[in-house]
Image (cartoon, rainbow, N blue to C red; front, side, top):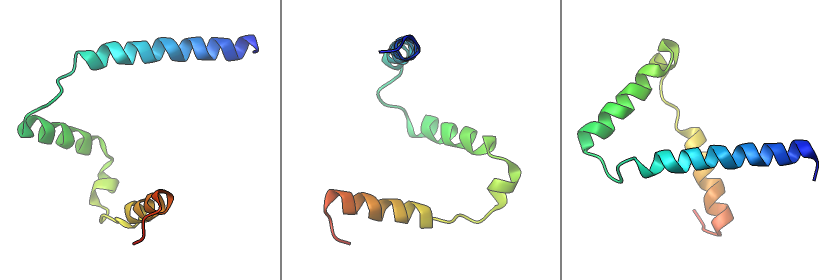
Length: 75
């Protein structure tokens, strides 16, 4: 394995350990109010133009059909 690849793996391992340490400190469950506040915060991060655009679920429906196909389900 090349040195660059080893360095990338080492860096990824460290990053995953940091994430694991952070994740252990997070609550397993949260209140509905906290969840909605988090969603609102993320929504506010979207640019104004994105928030004004009508929602288009076609991409989600396409993804669900593709996943169902991979799982061998019929729709």
